Length: 121
View 1: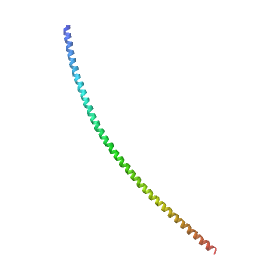
View 2: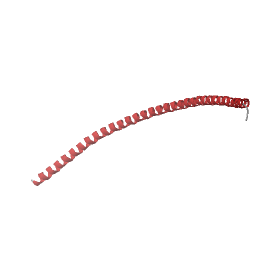
View 3: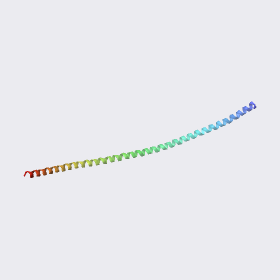
View 4: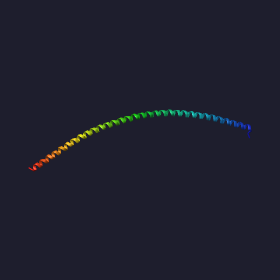
């Protein structure tokens, strides 16, 4: 059986080994913390760049939306002009139709008058 001094020496050796391992573990944790900090900074930079790209895309969509609205207004103005043309055409057709019907009624009255006049002679 080992003596007390041998046992204490063995425990001191083991304690030194554990202290070395804990020291290495602290260094590793510190390295991991540094790596995580670096990774976080890289991610922040990438997210900032991505945000800049999305901002540029948003501006493009706003510009495109403005162009679409302008084109829509232009199309609306053209349809309004076409509607005015059809309205004036409709007025002309109505006027000519009224004249045509009037002339036909007058001709019918004249023909009926001629037949009635010829019948009573």
